Amino acid sequence: MFVGKVASEQLLAFREWRTHDGVKAATINMEVGVIRRMLKRAKRWHLIAEDLKPLRETRGIGRAMSLDEKLRLLRIIGQKPDRQQLRLAMVIALNTTMKGCEIKNLRWQDVDLMGRLLTIRKSKTEAGERVIPLNKSAYAAILELRDLAKSRGVLDGRHFVFPACENGNIDPTRPQKSWRTAWRKVTKAVECPHCGLLQDPGDTCQHENCTADMRNIKSPTAGLRFHDLRHHAITELAESQASDQTFMAIAGHVSTRMLNHYSHVRLAAKRNALDALSDSFSKGSPPKCATSEPNQGEGGYDTSRATNPQCDKSPSNEVIENYGRPEWTRTIDLFRVKEAL
Image (cartoon, rainbow, N blue to C red):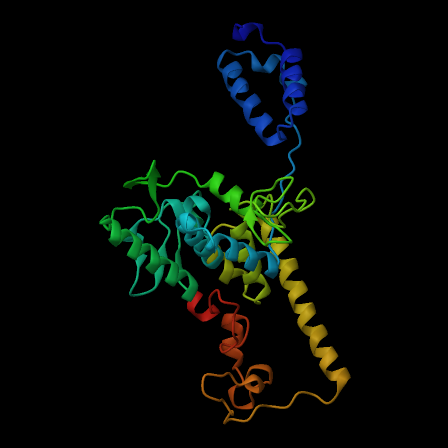
């Protein structure tokens, strides 16, 4: 068909057909956008532009996992030795807020093992180019990847941390293209309630000695995107009472809509903390200060020191003003505010 003969009725019929096939509005708008650019080049788009307004797209902010879902996913992916790189990419995403494309484009020259830092040199936006401190979990994942690269003899500063792999052949000069198929299998995996076998969804259990009905068994992480790991990590940062400046410095660019969402998450975390404080007072006397000499056993942790306010370590106003909370407050295995700044 010649470009000059394209009519609005034909494009509307095309959109209806794609919608009937279950294609999302964002994809359809991109497809029509290709046609629009060709028609603009042919000076024909203005004739039908009024009849073809873009479809309304539903843009979800993202999904944050519950603690049980997070632990379950880590346990499942840990049971698959052939998914080692995917497991390590997941750990890095959960502990750095990095996007999938940022992880894939990471080179060994961007990793500072002495300073425990990652430098993001290539991102979609200028704000995405940043330096991220490594916590214990992310640092351990990087060390495991380094040992893996050394065993393959492909450890060079210009090489990619996650190299391309096709038919078992490793090419460290090219980045990993995608792990979409492997990720979907991991997130959709279910466990038989009778024998506990980890398997793909199906009608019956795949164990030869078990015929349990699996039709109603569904993974709680089905449909979880790899990009949602970034959303989960930022949500945990927000819940840790980190300031906007802190988690934006760690996460890079965050849109206004996303920032408002995380502000609501932070507000909910503050409300829960204050509700817990109210409950503690209603049950008895106010909490007492811990002693300066905690009774900490060998290999243990002093619970009174962790839960009671420290009389001898009251934070200064300057510390609270700079960091948004006491310097000595513990975080949830991401980054201390002072280290991030």
